[in-house]
Amino acid sequence: MRFQKYFIFIFLLPLIISCSDETEMESNNQMEHSSSLEELIKHTEEFKKEIYSYGNGIHVAVGYGIANSIMVEGIDGNIIIDASDSTYEAEIIHNQFKKINSNPIKAIIYTHNHGDHTFGTSYYYNLYEDKPQVIAHESTDYYMERILGILNPIISKRSTRMFGTALPEEQLINVGIGPYLGVGNSPVGYIKPTITFQDNLKLTIAGIDIELYHAPGETNDQLFVWLPNKKALMPGDNIYRTFPNLYTIRGTTHREVKGWVDSLDQMRSFNPQYLFPSHTRPLQGTAVMETLTIYRDAIQYVHDQTIRLMNKGYYPDQIIEMIQLPKEVASSPFLKEFYGTVRWSVKSIFNGYLGWFSGNISELDPLSRLEEAKRFSTMVGGEQNLFSELEKAIKNQDMQWALQISDRLIALDFQVSKTKKLRATAAQTIAAEATNPNKRNYFLATALELNPNFESTTLLPNTKELLNEISMDMFFDILSVRLNPEKIDSSQYRVCFAFSSGLKRTITLRNKVAEVSSIDSECNLEIESDDQVFKETLAGLRKPIITVASGTINTNGESTAFLRFLGYFTD
Image (cartoon, rainbow, N blue to C red):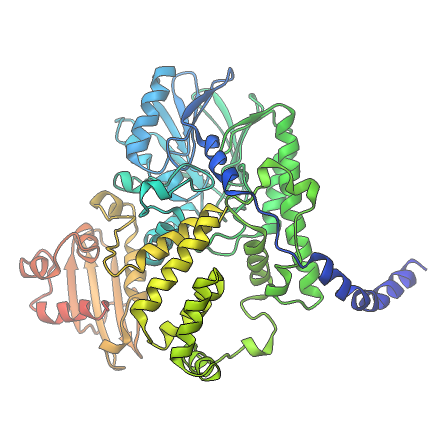
């Protein structure tokens, strides 16, 4: 009987859904409420530079950079949880911590791979002959190498925009989870973890009982720190005082939203009395469980409602107009959209489950950007008319439409200089009204880049010390993804490398791809080099011509051929 009732309910469900779609669309077809710009300015108070100290021996440095750094006092040494985003900031923070307790640092724990938590580590590492342990999840170094390696150019560019690192100081209000990103204050100080774990790890350091748990959320390698004797929880970036970045516009792998909820539930199971997030200020008392609960409920709501509407056949652009947080949830100060947004999250959740195809057949194989622009231009009476529509949109303060028109004019290569100038105006106007700092900074930075005199800077400059922390295999991966197919033919060509460490790698060019392997037979070129010299040459710290000519890299008499080979991997 129970099965029969269940079957009838499932059978009737499509009829119930089809009758309610139109009403639901009308009732929910509104943009989510956003806070005023004044609230964003006020939000900066959350990052007032201060050391928060507690009687349980825990101290949190807030406002010294985008991420907090936490010190836990032990018996004969201290522990640092997240080492800040630069060695410059790490030194400033450590000088403040030493005023409280000057014992040596015995361990550094990474809550995850992001540079604002890891790039200050070498400052601490170089302080002591007895090096502190560096502890992280087993996948942290993999994700770090990918950011520093094959994805470095695009992630650096998009991070520069999102965090506004190139903006004039007067344009930057904050970055949502901190006052600013300071990775450019000093060379990258990342150190590889020396202790890793898979699911959980319990250990005692300097008399402190520590429990670490893998907790996927903002990153796949995220962990949280639980200090059972102190009832203290360090959740990393799985909670902070703003709606979470379930998707970040600088670009990221899919963030498993349901897993994020599960991670927060695991944290709640410990009933913590202290919460020390890696961004924004600490919490204690009853506010801890209340905040963890409403935060996980907000994430689950967006996840579940997105899935519900996906299953009803709606496209992502429709769903983003249909989901708003319930008022009782949206009113929480921890869920103002100062970092992530519901709209961006919906798109990411959809893509995570179903991929990039929305299901709309017009989007499966659309016209090229150029062809679409040509037809649009013809439809409105020609390119000049299209440009006039852009000017009209700017005059009418219809700035989003102006951006979309400018896309077509740039594709058509029509009045590009004037179009970019108007596009910059539209971007600046939208940014001035944006209450989400990620969007605001990204638009302002893009407007800045549209200036023909703009000069870009490198967010993560290479240093010898940093290169030492990156595996040789990552350098070969970088070569593989930077092969320029226009510079080579499809015939096979093999270059074999032997390094001073004993490592051997081969690159085989074939069918306009670069296959990396350990095969070292039948080589067209045989190259011998010190590992570090090779890394520095590829990273631009050494000039290839001089390095090869001096014999520092041994080409066995084939220097011209090797330099030509390296040229295949440049634009």
